[in-house]
Length: 160
Image (cartoon, rainbow, N blue to C red; front, side, top):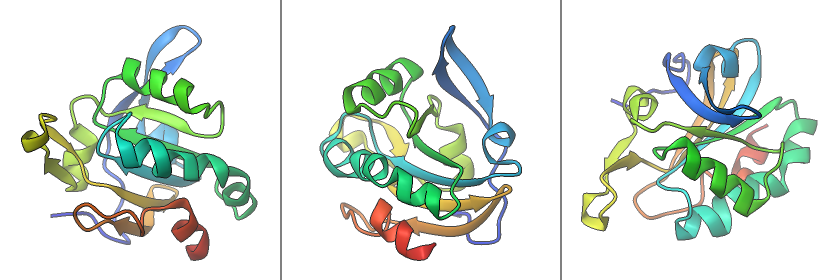
């Protein structure tokens, strides 16, 4: 069952790429005491994710921050090297934290795993966005299959 508004984000460890290479980062480090806009994509380098989803959050990063968002994070069931390469390819710099949920543990704990086996991708995340304040989900926007609307940066901006 998917988590909902009012629930705490699950405890998890992501991988991110730092100055010294791959580094673990806990959900507490990301969410505790902060306002976070997190969005999840089915896969790095995939068409909608690369053409619309990630670019939208990069484009609107300053507006999101002006409305109180301290961290913008992208999570995908991909490994840390893929997430690093995708972030570089998209030129996100420090605007978007790229989080690898390589084993899908956070995605499963959120209740938002999907089976993309028919596309040769295996278990992945559904497309969604959420606004989290001090570890508590304040807004969660899960897309219906194949859509891209409610998880966009523009939609989230209207919620702030």
